[in-house]
Length: 119
Image (cartoon, rainbow, N blue to C red; front, side):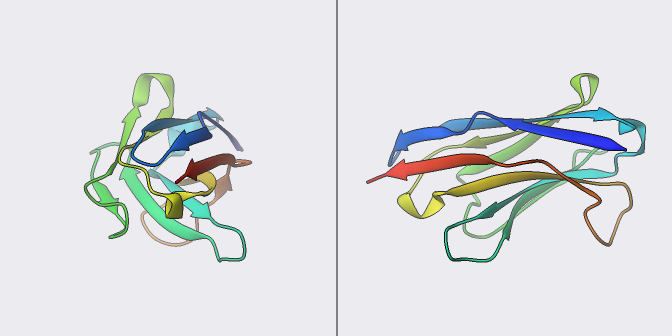
């Protein structure tokens, strides 16, 4: 089993920045990739960004490309999401996810952290 704990959410003005962290514990040796998703009120959960654990390959949703950066610290078993130039439409609960295989479902999820961007 793997446990994921997110932190770093909060309230920020439009144009500001936040950095989210996702600490993984447990059977982390099986990690293939970690990702961030978000869910705004009344909307479905959507993909934000992902990073592969060994090679550090990244992929972003078009809506955040150029503004958000995903990274990882393998020694700390932690993934990060640096969010710059935040917009009110970025307001959502942000969830961290971990996958142990190259394709398929994300096996583990965190509890989420709220990000609110005021205009």
